Image 1: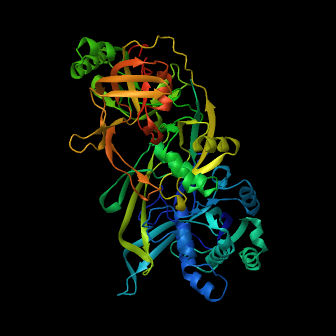
Image 2: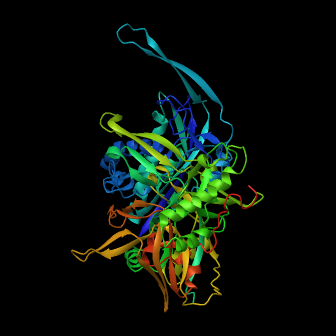
Length: 231
Length: 400
């Protein structure tokens, strides 16, 4: 019997933050990634789903063995099952879908978007204007200890307290692995609070806005992490 | 006579979509479709959605695919969100052209399919002479037009491109769909897990369909078929399906909505008489012919001299092909069921025109654009649109 997990996640930038993407101001990683809103056609600041998936996968890979050794997980090879093998040689799509993160006004708007249904936020979201800042950076020449010649870079970044919302869905989960998967995903997501979540020192915090099926909150560890993951 | 249902299906992409056509050097560059999605891709997406939702099993899908009771047209980019295939959205055929960009005229014109059949018959089926005559006549009409930049040397071929009828224009003009929605491309890398930085040489460029793009097509199926049941389920509960590559990374999320479509099968002309008609290739056209040496049916493009047959119950319609205009392209794909590439083969391209003598039950002509000729239409191949009247205007006919 196959089940599904759906999570709604709110990210708050806690530093000027930068994520790459396919649009507009990209110049070899120095630009801010933008997505095209499917309804309005406007370009908005976003975090690409592939970036979030990679970030999440990295933490799942690091934590899975540790959590199993402490009895928090019992299922085997969850990360590979959910994210697929590296470069996915079988070319079968992995069961997880991580969609792009779009700016939102606040937690209330994010909760409403989660209640609208799976991935409905991609169409329904009314994104706010996102304040941007320009950060100038240099590179140090290791030999002289001074600024390297011509190494002055300007980056466009979102300002701290910018909020972005995204959803991830995992379908085709075995019923007996559902709770373990929820634990692994939520604990891995919680690590975003303690590490870089974007380029060049971008930090942020995450909050779980919604979780389906809600019956998962009956598990003590899932409830503890879901309610405790906030910054 | 009708024992199946025709559904008009629309897709709206909520995220960019990667539908690869060609993979370049060492898997680094992916050229993608930008204005059409093959029917087989949509079928695969529907089946995958149903499997993930627990509505079907692998065995049921295998049964449906091996004995198909369904046909799918390609899905075409539409410049309007509520377009219907053939009424509002179509494919530019082999005799169509437009003026180059920037000349103030975005309309799609034709060299004249109406004259094509007549000229072919009077030229003893000489395709080259016929084409020369039609083009020369149209070019004279264009160059007599006046002193603006719309001259015969400023036209371009648009065979196989998706076009949309602009109902807001004074003469319901057809225009390229992609003039409203542009494709994009993005650059990606792969992370080396051990070093935590970019994997050497892992640099990819993908062409993608932009989010917000709408594609329309039709799916025709028997009521008892699995596909029909899935479409009825989507009618009741609108769904989101995943189309193309990179779906786990958030690409290809599409809303799908479905409604039944009425097809007029009334045919006033008597059956049985031979007549010459032109047909536009909507689903790439191929035939399976045994090779002389080993008797193994191999796919090849339809050519002059071939006889195409459409059967529905006891009704039969045959087309004896005399002339072909257009081109040949390579087609293939990936089978999710077998986790392996599909056989690559050549077929007549989207928008090509075939002209042939038609004999049999002419009522089948109105079903051909939806049902297709044979079971290959279950993968989006062998679908023809009879061009009894050219749906595109000739330059000069309406006071251009």
